[in-house]
Image (cartoon, rainbow, N blue to C red; front, side):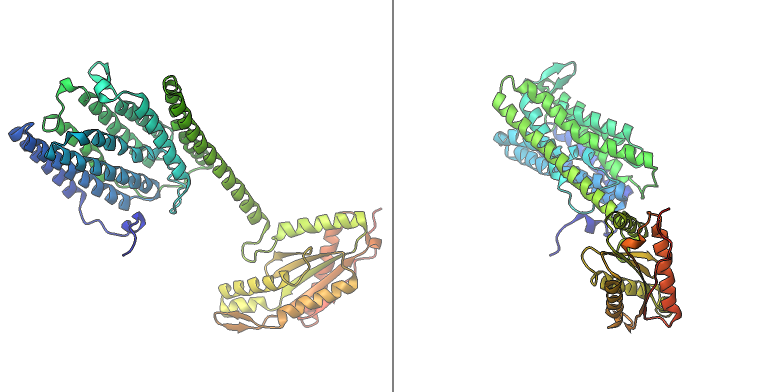
Length: 504
């Protein structure tokens, strides 16, 4: 059996049209109204009403998965976590149905806890950076999830339960209201600060859902309001479920357009702000909790700090690794992996300057593939690229560890050999030519015979000059290479520097 994944779900075509989903949900709402009107708050009415809400939860899960399939990369991460939220809510609602059916009130505290826990995946949404999220699991999400859990625990421990909630007009100041208020504020901030219309639409709509949901939770916390299962207030819960259901059923989003560099930088700053929001709120709550429960509050603060610190270290490691990768790409040829044109010339400049200071001999070699255009014309550029890669591999494997090999341009390679005399340079040039010629290059279209022409030049202490000699060396080695080509190719030719190279 294949493992379940949201990536595979994206390949499954939608089988339930959005209109059908909305009609089905409306039918369940009408059925619930009829049940409440007939049975009221009797046990059967409460159980049937809870079952209808459970079915609405399954429809919300279905529409969220379908919205995930229809979304581009920007929104699918949101719908994935929202689907997890509905999965957790369905578990809590199923327990609620069991409690109403069996009248086992001892499980009610556990049921309330599960409903509160079900919103934890919802809190993960503001951490996601949809424009840069990878399709693979990111361990940073574990640290973000830790911060959500720490925030949840802080709110759960400090703020009163429903039985001891603080009265604020028609609402009750409960942990649910606090949690929903923080989430609503975060969602509104995310919608306001983003440059993406997709992100703005998603968070703006979900902020309204959280606002109404928080108000309903707070209102129902007062026993005097009589918001028990089987009463008219069940319709409020069902209508609240209809908000994300309607958003998901009508959601259509393609791939985002190109954003400017300033917008991308602003997006990065905004995305890194929200992982600090939960730890800040948790710290403010825990400082109050520390007055009565110092040890517990200190332990939770330490856990939150460890999560933030680990996140900073991981991001710093990724930045350094990305910087190293960019530096490598900036200095290396993408096809052959050798030093690129600019980097190999920088090496030559430094070696010429060192040669001028220390008086060491310096050898320079230019290698060119013979009849490379014919290879491209006969076999195609992909085969030509394979030939270039193989030749580059043979050249780099045939020089000393402190020699430098770079792709000078096209099918030409430049080799810098510090401390190499004329005799050593001639030997090295012949060795490199033989390494390329000794066996054909194996490709998908068969073995291809490849030869190279090699031009050589050497500079000694008696020819020491200024850094401008780089140009003189390049001109001389280029002349040696063309001499090798004019004499029939597949050979090594040496050329001396001009007589005048001393500084005035």
